[in-house]
Image (cartoon, rainbow, N blue to C red; front, side, top):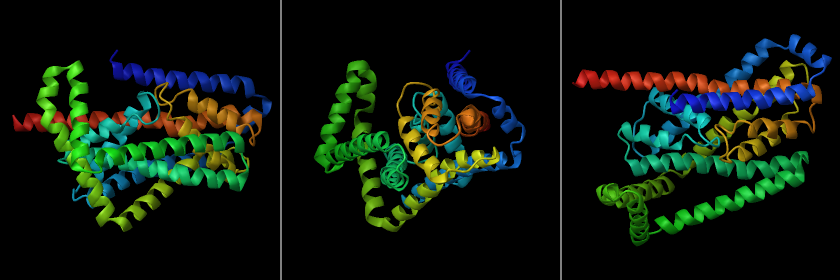
Length: 336
């Protein structure tokens, strides 16, 4: 069994086992009657929200590339997004697909440094949205205030530190040279040949990253606002899924409470412990939603939510990964 398949199977198994445990300890006769009367059309609508999440992520990547002068077609952007979703689902934390996006963007002719900027900009946009939305929803709902605010404070503090470190590295040419030298020394400790081979590339790609940052901040302020709006709509599509599932099961949507809980879960899921945060996401959801959702439907809710938001990432992501591999082999054969 390949390491990729092993990681995918492990992630799915952990998710299923944890969900089964939650279901076992929360089920009742009412649980089974809720399953029988579920509105499958609404559940399909919940899945369509996940599809919207994928499409909006691909659209955002295309916008970022366009603002920096690179024309990436939407089908290519979607292919990169789905391959990244697959990788994130089988690597520790929910944010493991970034290297894949950098590699696939650079394969499309985008400089490595600029590709890294695009991927990092995506995560900074996400972090900015989480940092602003979480306190607002916690205050508006009063939900899990103590725990939620602790998560918000830690996350915002780490974001500020990260942005400050980036500023120190890329503020001028000399600081880039110093950081490139540090990278060279770090790589040389593990592989001297590779360090010598890529020594000039370190500085070149870091400068490319800096140029992309300056271009984005100086030429595209309206573009940044547009990207933030796309980010808001994108994550809102994902965060609406549990509310649609609840309505499909015959319960209130608890939209504001659910949205606040989803913001906490997505931040907690960044902890790199299991493939795709399997187990962590399920337990976090069960704990948070038990505050406002009837206990006897928690297992059903968690199971359907993970099926739509996690297992589909693996299934459809694998299709795109295999399509990409087959296509690249076909192109190589045509060239030879």
